[in-house]
Length: 316
Ligand code: DHB
Image 1 (cartoon, protein in one colour):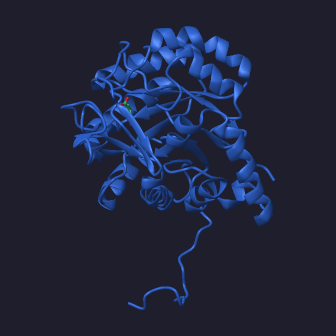
Image 2: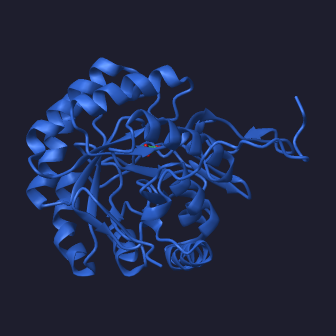
């Protein structure tokens, strides 16, 4: 059964690839993705100038997920542009993630990648780790202007937006208006859940230097599924959604698809397991599809509300 999907003129085979940020900043990491079973290569969120990021320790994992305060370490668009031709040998779609440190940086960064011929742009309006800088995605006017500017220069190259988990659906509604009005090509949800903290009770210290970071992994799967479904409904299934958050198994992928995702990204589990995670997930997803006797595409948005009160549920 096909684990692939095709949208925005891009063929994802399988419809599983890395989340921006995970294993995708250095040339070696990008080549590793190329050699893996990932269905695309997504480059680390890129700022106009290279950055070394926040002080370490800045990444932590446990059995339930991860906490990161990376601070956008990346090689800058010029370097990624140089690396790009070598990534073409892997014959996978290549997507760039754009993260301006100021609103007027989004166009020049995007232009570098358009010149290099990337297959799509993912505009990151949700970096949670820049101290003193609010996530742009909560400022709807600024978000609209940035997306419009990038759309204006992108021509036929698809432009998507990466969003944070919104704590109230009114925010999803406002963003959905912008997505429709500007004909944004895809939506990636969710970025990590911001300003979370883990504390080591024995050492009486936070696990990362910045104290606060973005949460990912198993902890966030229900948050991600809620956001995927909100946007699937608000956009009436007409704008493809990339589901991201808490994918560890083939069943998790099925849940994202049932919620409304057309493909998925993997972050925390990629960091824990390395790029071989994609071969395992593809196999597990394929087995789940066999059991259901359907393709990945058939699953998109298929989850329905539970109707029957079941014995194991509290009868409130
Ligand atoms: C970083 C983390 C994110 O979740 C993101 O979207 C962009 C950047 C980071 O800290 O590098």
